Image 1 (cartoon, rainbow, N blue to C red):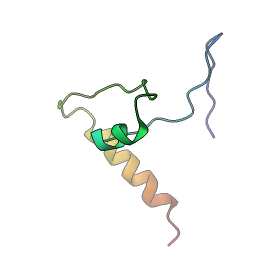
Image 2 (image 1 turned 90 degrees about the horizontal axis):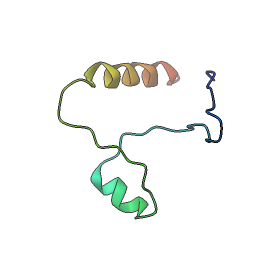
Image 3 (image 1 turned 60 degrees about the vertical axis):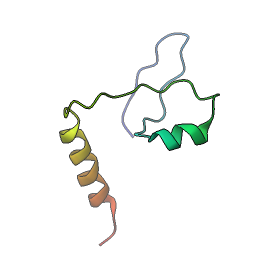
Length: 60
């Protein structure tokens, strides 16, 4: 696991996810820390890197 720094008085971030609107609906109104992404194609490299990392973790 990588290192993380904790800001005083705040809990550490333990997960980041890419969710659909349906996912958010299932989480309900108690989940308030969602940040919407615009349609700007600036996340293509990140998504590709996630896919590559997942493939490397799969047993062959």
